[in-house]
Image (cartoon, one colour):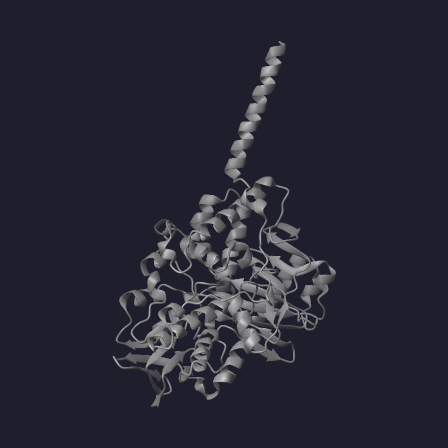
Length: 511
């Protein structure tokens, strides 16, 4: 049996960030990781065919201050994702080429509908406390609704409904009918607003790591050295008044005073706890399914789509890929389009072989970009996160209706000597690497507080802005004042009737 002061379960960004902070504070710590690698839901594959590619979490952007700080400390650099040309939106047989974040149409009803839903979602999200969404004034109402219910009630056009349904599938890899409205608007707020969440430039997808995102975990593991134990899945945790013991599948026993779980919440079901987890925690982890996604990379001889005036972006509700973008290396080598198959589409296409997915995606791109060169890829690789035993899916756990208001407070609540990290428990950029770091440092400080090394007020700490990540304000003020379709129609009707009455009155005066 090995004895240390603290055990961290999981060697993803969250677990390693917690262990690094504890280690820096002089705490003797061991990290137990089930996989044969570090990185968790970040996964960088290296191969001469493409040098490196991220098949897991990859993107960072402005306001993600902790990941910027961590990368700088570890000597890692970013590059900006290519986003300089036109986008394509494909809804059924309707193909729209546009520039900027929000598609423009010649139909004022569609445009007003699109902007009004955006305005409403942003307004609602700001009413939800990021640290306690269950305390929102309308929590009890919004948590009984799905995001689909909201779209059905709010959208006047199928155009807007299709676009925001696609946004849900892209952001949280779940169908609109599967997620709570309260949880979805909380997720938007944790990412600093709708535009910040979905934008590339000035948004959450602005940058990637040169060399891949898994380096973040690898360099933290290098600092911790022999403190990181791979291929060591924890199957049992026993707690007493004086300590906690972790038992691995290989028979190792680690004894400590405290522990941090950095596993996805749903994976906690694979661990036997003595004493059992509290009832609300047990119920919560049964109700937090992971999202469904297959991440695809298709490589070409050249980035010919740029010569055609395209940024490599296609949004298409009908898939197989619902969203793709340019993933060429910053020096222009290994031209690539990254595509996301998510939610129900991911479940359908997980039944196919990788080769079958490759040709269906190549065909989709050829049709969307109207260029047959997409039918000639030089290499293809994808990652089905639904088959990952120690993740259960990606990017993040989603919450159906009723979960936040009934069980939400249990997500971060320590259980005796066990503390909980993981990006799902973050209040800032949940679901991203930033959220993983915030949650882990908070959990590590909880232990430092119990150990008497810091005060209670130091557990939650804000992160100062990064000089390397300018935080431009997003959105135009005029969007905030656009009327809803209903208001526009009412006003137009009144205006037309008023004009008609005026014309009639003048006509009658003449006769």
